[in-house]
Figure 1 (spheres, rainbow, N blue to C red):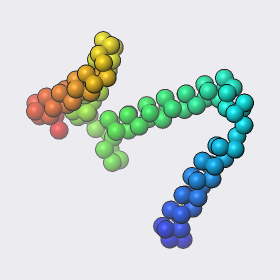
Figure 2: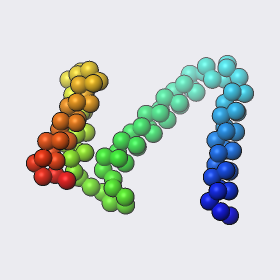
Figure 3: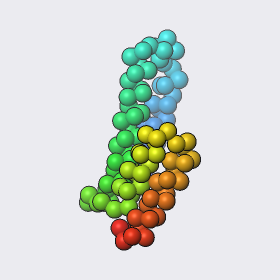
Length: 103
């Protein structure tokens, strides 16, 4: 099978799951178990994305300026800095770490 067939199949599956989501009764979606499950899945996926982008580079584990930025942003979050401030703190920390020689 060519890559185009796999891509088309993936698109059809994504579209099908989207349509099925509209067909599910609202009473089922309002249950606490579904709400808790979807919240947990969202947090888990976001955490995995952040960890993969912070510590990974291709097939390797790397420790560079991104780790410094993540730690600085986490400290800013603990100190209850507004979101834009957290972004600025992380950016400045990464820039300073790269300036100091961390690739």
